[in-house]
Length: 286
Image (cartoon, rainbow, N blue to C red; front, side):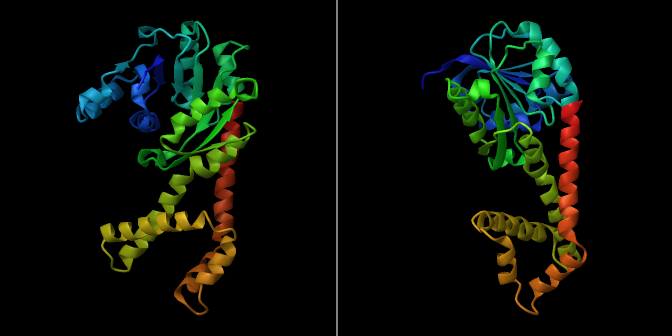
């Protein structure tokens, strides 16, 4: 395979960046830089990759100083820092950018205009935002993507969009949205979504234990039930009708659904998601 003559830079290397790195086509890049300011995290990274076959990581360099690398035209930069750290990272990054690398941000709530402002370059358009989720660890994420129309429009920008899709398709499915504000909805639904499911899973597992099942067996039952329901549910046009079909009159499922209705569980879930959406919009205005 012919290598693309460029380097890939991870600014910040938390769990999501690590999942992307482990599944990306690392051989496509001359060098991959993992730039992490925390020396504790750098030690963790070194320990993690000591457990892998070193030859697969020979083009990877772990550094904690931005000035240790030179940004060139063909570079791809993934901003994987906390939203609160975005401004300081961009300020440090700004003088290193000599031309126009492709920049992708996975920080929740930080809009592209804000990132451009931090970079102090009003003519800079090669910027995309991505909102993956923790399912990336298993290659089962769904990533919401948005790119500036000036970059991803009909005048040559589609190739850049293809490049971004290629990166995130390695960790699961991708979904391009037309408006950047739609990413707030993506954040509230799928970005935060795994935590909602884990919350429900934990409650189901606790209930199973109270009914006498061993916890490891309960977790297997619950996990596989959710996996199966998700796979079948994505092809069902009317989920309400499906619930009625499986809720036999006077049966066990009907009793459980009745409790959900009495407690207005659907209203609670909607309220929680709308609260997450509101917070995402608040972050984008900071």
